[in-house]
Image (cartoon, rainbow, N blue to C red; front, side, top):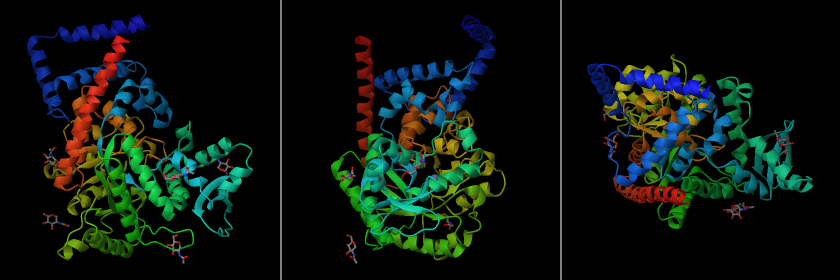
Length: 509
Ligand SMILES: *[C@@H]1O[C@H](CO)[C@@H](O)[C@H](O)[C@H]1NC(C)=O
Ligand SMILES: *[C@@H]1O[C@H](CO)[C@@H](O)[C@H](O)[C@H]1NC(C)=O
Ligand SMILES: *[C@@H]1O[C@H](CO)[C@@H](O)[C@H](O)[C@H]1NC(C)=O
Ligand SMILES: *[C@@H]1O[C@H](CO)[C@@H](O)[C@H](O)[C@H]1NC(C)=O
Ligand SMILES: *[C@@H]1O[C@H](CO)[C@@H](O)[C@H](O)[C@H]1NC(C)=O
Ligand SMILES: [Zn+2]
């Protein structure tokens, strides 16, 4: 069988080589015109980078070739839950993991702190309660005396753990209650509404942990650490106007949250000199009445004035298919415009498979001068949006694994961002909500982008450009960007050297 396959392969190649010269010339011209257009194609590599490029491309071609006759072997063609372990064995992945990735620009507080840390750290604290309903944890929280609830039973986690026969088993239960990962996602999550319900339940479940004021501080530091360890040097995090609680019931206002965030970032930067920082985008909810959104807009305009170095703008979140459109809120979102003022927007738009009403959010996002577009999954279906996005250089934050887990695409090779990448649209790669699906901060998403969204010939230059894009598309000031780029370049040079050294060691060894 293998011999036969190789023979067919060889015949295909031979036939290509036997075409007339004029045909080959024209064919090569088309191919090279295409290859000159994709993301990264304008970069020139140094000799050391070329050597690393050879290695990563050999690995990439190897993975593609081994799946040509059975694409279930191809990791991006299968669900992340089923391919993750194999991905982590991939040589391409191992190189990507070490790579300095620049900025993560599309993230949500509440779904970016690993479940591992939530279980092993937060639930070990005293006064931490869970509300259990038919064996499922539906809520959590810190209380001196837990509330009385007729829907579920509040139990102190440390007491339950102490009573359990096996601490490891108990912690595994907690973990299983949090994760969305299952072996058979196609059965458990048959459609987008089911998976979104479970996804929203995740936020609901961890909310009581992450909104406890002392935890919020530690969770932010831990998040920065996890991202930093995955090669991320800067973050922009969407967060609601949350008001965390102290154990004695005291409520902290959102200003406290921003100040705490600012202090944690400062502290983390002090501890990690090659880290560039983090900022906040305030996220409103697309289920809210218009009056709430108008109030949000006014509040965030003030916050941007009060904390110009921390709060950069406003966005609207939640499942796009079934919530209010941007058009529905347009007069509220035009409030700054109407008052000769300004509020930068970072709208989620086109995060849908429909070509209907909700994907028109893309058009409203552009009319509202969005600074970047979150997802933009539906963009290639809208030629005029394509043109405007390119003309105005509006960056698109692509989150491959999120789109797969949340059921917009199953085989990642069909992800529409491939079209944007092939034409050098301003694209950056982020991870949206890595915690509920146990992805690393960026590495898994970068792998998917490299192996399935980029063409098979897209090489190290693609990865390098995606990292550069992320820094360029961030809301850092131009001074901050310059310094971030310098830090990134140093890390990049180290990365190239490290990959080369380990390769040489392997050859000698
Ligand atoms: C949780 O993390 C905090 C902050 O890193 C640390 O001070 C504390 O000791 C940890 N607690 C547990 C139980 O691991
Ligand atoms: C969720 O946690 C509860 C309480 O600890 C446990 O009884 C249950 O088995 C867990 N569920 C899963 C799916 O592990
Ligand atoms: C509640 O706890 C916080 C944090 O420890 C403290 O700052 C505040 O003074 C306390 N409030 C009351 C009413 O005890
Ligand atoms: C968008 O930007 C253009 C050009 O800067 C400006 O004329 C227009 O008023 C802005 N619109 C909104 C809604 O901010
Ligand atoms: C940064 O992005 C802007 C807007 O997309 C683009 O015009 C510019 O060329 C980029 N600069 C670099 C250094 O990539
Ligand atoms: Zn998002």
